[in-house]
Image 1 (cartoon, rainbow, N blue to C red):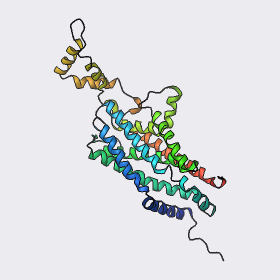
Image 2 (image 1 turned 90 degrees about the vertical axis):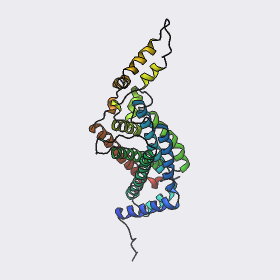
Image 3 (image 1 turned 60 degrees about the horizontal axis):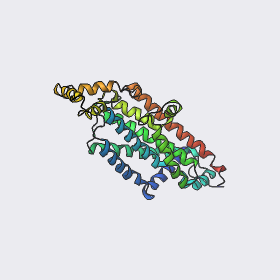
Image 4 (image 1 turned 45 degrees about the vertical axis):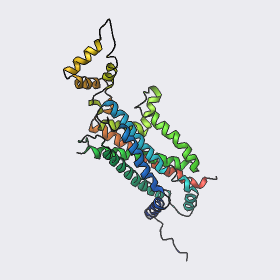
Length: 313
C-alpha cells in the first residue's frame, strides 16, 4: 500500500509554506527590506516633516512622499517572491501543491512584512519629531488611523507586485518592470501633477490616488492654511510704482494688525479639494477601495499561477 503524504489539505499547506517563507526571511536575507524601509522613512521624514499637517502645501507634498514610501516598500517586498522560485512552484504544483494555499501563505507572510514596515515608518516619523494631530477620524487616535491607511497602501502595493511576480518568469524581468509600475503610480496619483480627461480617469485605478486621498483627509487638508499666496505677495514687497511701494504697505498693515493667519486660512478656502474632505465616510471609502484592490490582486495572482503547468519556458 502506498504511503499517504503527511499533508494534503489546503489549510495544512498554508502553514507549511508560511514556515518556508519565514525561513527564507531569516536565511535568504529577505529581512533586508526592514532596514531599507527605515532608511527611506528617515530620509523622507527629514525632508517633509516640518510642514506636514500644518499647511496645505506641506501636507500635500508630505502625504505624497509618505504614499511613495509605502508603495516603494510594498513593491520591493514581493516583486521577486514568486518568479525566483517559479520552477519549484511548477514542480510542487504537479505533485499536489494547491496554488490557493501558496498564495494565502504569501498573503499572510507579506501582511507581516507590511505591518512591520508601517510600524517602522511611524516610529521613524515620531523619532524625527514629525508633527501629527492628536484626534483621529475613525478611532480616537490619529496615529492609529494613519497607521491603518499606511498599511493598506503598502499591502495593496505588495499584492500588485505579487501579480507582476506571478506573470514574469525571471527576477531580471521583474526588476525591469518595477520602475514602470512606480512611474505609473506616481504620475496618476492625481496629486502633484494636474490631470484631466482620460488621464484623470486612470487615477481611479492607482493605489497612490486613494492613498493620497485618505492621508490628506486624515490630515484635514481642506481646513489648513495655504501659504503660497502670501509667499508670492511677499516677493513683490520691493515693487516700486510711481515712488510708492503698495505691496509693502499692504503686507505691513496685515502683519501689524495680526491678520496674516486669517489671510492664510482664507486662502486655503479657495484651494479646497472635494476628494480630500475630512469625513469618516471619505476615509472609510478609501479604506474599502484599498481592501478590494488587495483582494483583487491576490485573486489575480492565484488565477495566473493556476496555469503554471502550461509554462514551457
